[in-house]
Amino acid sequence: MKNTQTKMTSLTDLLNIKYPIIMAPMFLVTNAEMMIEANNSGISGCVPALNYRTDELFREAIQSVRAQSNGSIGVNLIVNKSNIKFKKQIKSCVDLKVDYIITSLGSPEETIKLCKPHGIKIFCDVVDVKYARKVEDLGCDAIIAVNKEAGGHCGPKQANKLIPELVAACNIPVISAGGVSNGMQMKEMLDLGACGISMGSPFIATTEAGVSKEYKQAIVDYGAKDIVLSEKLSGSPCTVINTPYVQKTGTKRNFLETYLSKNKKLKKFIKMLTFYKGTKALEKAAFSTTYDTVWCAGPSIEGVKSIRPVKQVVSELIEQFENA
Image (cartoon, rainbow, N blue to C red; front, side):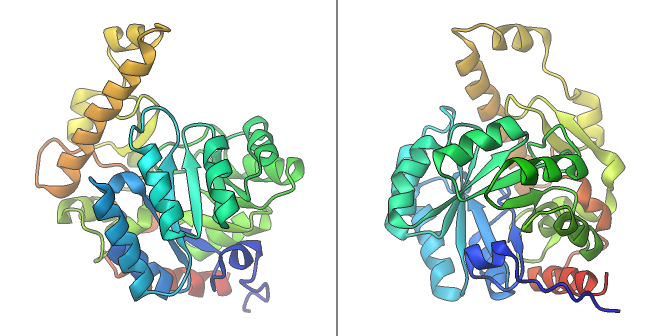
């Protein structure tokens, strides 16, 4: 029996999309081609601004997506001091009139002040009620509930705890991030009170993704049990596939890095250095054949059985949801 619950939720209303799904912004993975296919499949694509080396390339990509697709365009911004490109990126978002911004790893206050007057919606990554209330008071439009199953920087709580807590505590929509690779899991998130989902890792293994074939195949070959947390990539715990290289090098910072990260004067610079080194490691593994394989992904790779077009990932997800 088909699910009579329609796909019209507050996320579909917020973004004017057919299905309540955001293709989550994935560092080094999301590109214009993926966003075009996502938007033309009835969902919304969101890209990290940091995926582009220059502001010119970032602007070209957003303009390309707008010209070749219908749907809402999202941009993910790192809003703490480690992102030295923040000022330029936010100006470009305003100039290009993107539909929404997802803020991560810092206070969204400046982003909200600069973008809301231009009609740009602001969604904020949160992992607990305390921070969710803060960003709601600042004026954000929705919160991204980053749970324990999320890829990249995950939260400490399971979705079945986090989502109901946020729904009860806040008056703005809650979007679930993490742990969804099929329609049944999507239904579970909506039943918990989420207005939609943000799904990333399954889209890594798509024909449109610009990463190496080895990275895509790893998404197929590995599963949820192979995901571990690494402290070596950004200064904050980040989920990666537990490849032989990761097993060999470990996931913990060394003694000196840990000690320096607690020094009030030095911790900002240590975090920036860790982020830079981690970025280079991820970039090397993502785009080339290498034994130094540090591949970022979340437990939702469990449901990925083949490399498919973005359109097929979406259509299969919706079919499963409707029959759940």
